[in-house]
Amino acid sequence: MENSQHASLQASELSCFRDERLLFSDLSFTLHPGEVLLLEGANGSGKTSLLRILCGFREADAGDIYWCGSKIAESSYYNDMAYVGHADGTKKELTVLENLKFAMALGSAGKYDIEQALDKVQLAGFDDNPVHTLSAGQKRRLSLARLLITHNLLWILDEPFTSLDRQGIKLIESLMAEHLAQGGMAVLTSHHDLSMADLNLKRIHLQACQ
Image (tube, rainbow, N blue to C red; front, side):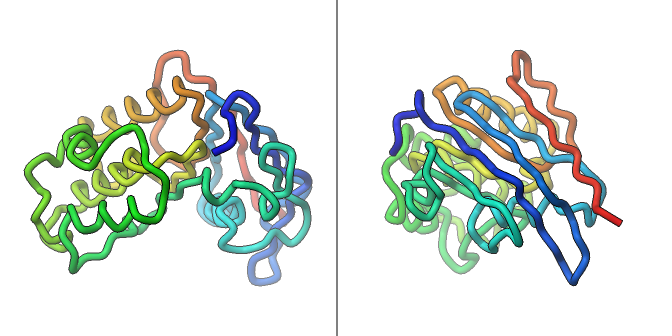
């Protein structure tokens, strides 16, 4: 992983069309360690499309993305980035433990082992439960545990507070605060008002072009 002290995510003059409609254009920003970028805007304004571009799931129609000064395809970006989307990204037929072992095999080891991560997200004792037996909130917590067992400097989160109660929301906020304090970065969409103290927050409000 790149040294977090010198890491940065930079978007330069990004443009995106969907169904021949311009969602956004000439969008630029820079994100440094310890910072959060919150994407705001109405449904259809391009928030999820921008996240998908940042994840490499689709290409921007114009512009470039840089990681630590290099284009993302020429850097360690995909090793340093983790994505949690609307879907929880788990295999329903596998157990909680099997899902986390699979995730761990795909990335470098994080700060927490599986047992510690499950305890952190309040899923201790659910190791052998098939994922399809979990509630929506528990599945969301499992997706967060995946972030803890792999070492990723940049978290990209699409509505991470979905399906969570007040306690679950506080849990995500504490995990994010810990991640940022350790030099991590995050980009997210959320209808939840981030109320974390001392949050180094940047905002981009997307408004679909007419």
